[in-house]
Length: 385
Image (cartoon, rainbow, N blue to C red):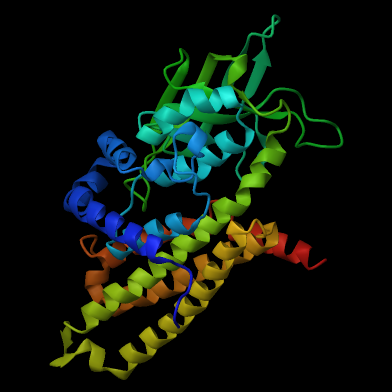
């Protein structure tokens, strides 16, 4: 079906991103996967082309474009060539919304120049060894000093995207005990400078997929954080986190759609070259039927994400809507990429083929940003069930 989501400006941006990926990413990507992260210089290069400043308001030096469509273009282009931009997505989609929505003018002026240049990379630290989807179980604590000048943070975080290379980490911590009738109360957001004494990066976790996006364990031992690094109001973190989940889940769903579309493109090319029993693999009815099924599913996902992006840009995408996008598109990607890998045969299991990377990269999409089981709960609640 013909798409109407993008304008000429988006198409020009797409060509720019496509050229950047061809020059700065694709030739080096295999080595970055072996390294377990992208080089820090990549983020500065993304800063140089203005990527990190697209959504930053003009008063802080950015382009002031709040539309999600530019991020959608990037998701499609990185998937098209089977790569990723490390933790750049976490920096933009997890770090920036909190700084813009809940930061003070002073905080934005202090951090935005480095944010846009790639000199200050951000990460969001929510998950703990004992607290994943249940954020009310967070135990990392922050105690305000007697004179109110600083907090002292103690605790540990895990599964933190971009945590190994981050310079500023937005840490969800408990600043007061949970209320008897509300376990979610008492959580706050503190921006922690990773050069602070007592802060340590533990293991960089060895994942089955998304291998160029560093995912780390973090520890905080009597880390002093200035009171002016409190993001928003004390005790309001849970509502803040809920506020950004719509964009996070839209991003997860859109990326999954883009990966599924890329899988079909990779597989269509492969079956038109691969011969089995003296015939092109594309000539077999099973190949045609499988790819036809995949194409129909991905087109349905495309219609869904296109509508969701339009609603998001109009500030009309609800929590249940985002949950549906995340649930449907991640499940579609799982099915489609699995079928496409099967058509590659043994070669689909070899990491030099992009279908293998897509297979492992997309698996976590049904877990993070709220597991798909949680998405079903949100949708059912919206149905008054």
